[in-house]
Length: 197
Image (tube, rainbow, N blue to C red; front, side, top):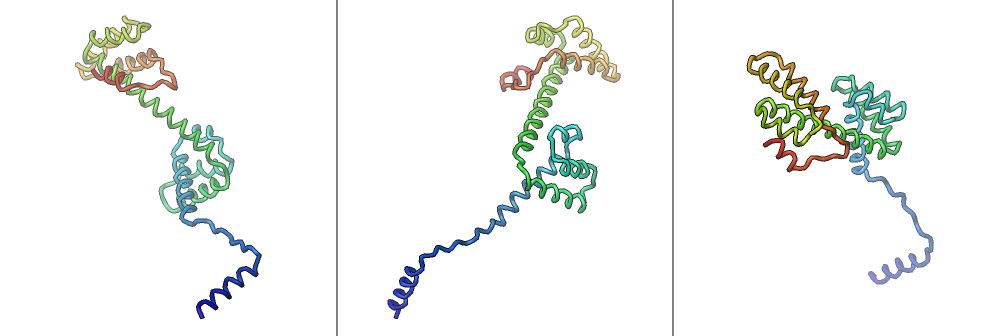
């Protein structure tokens, strides 16, 4: 009986030459993951300043929603609006937006790195005095030795007297002018070790 059943099945299959096509259902898990990524993207963009949001050149409806989300408290309405933003992102190509956002973050990381370099030099000049000044002038020969020395001494006197750090701030600003940072410039571990020493 089993043989008879198999033959009937095979025969029936051979007789049908039609190919049946089945609709491929979207993977719900993948859709949820994609929407979570888009939700996070909307949330990340909402934390930017309005000027930064403008540079992303978002479609008008998304731009308005993102600006609106930025001012909202972390409650249900905010989450609903972020879901709306994620849904709108799902309809468009988000790769260019993600690229612009990544470049913006990279610039921000460079600014933080530059701030730390200048801050370390300022602290070294105030703490170590002429030794650090000589080292700085070897590295940055275009710097004004006299102005640096004056700002350094005034900052040291302010620190000793416990006065507000006016000269320290002026020293920081001048050091920032001295260091000409390029956008593509990276600081190696050796450079940071030299600054720390």
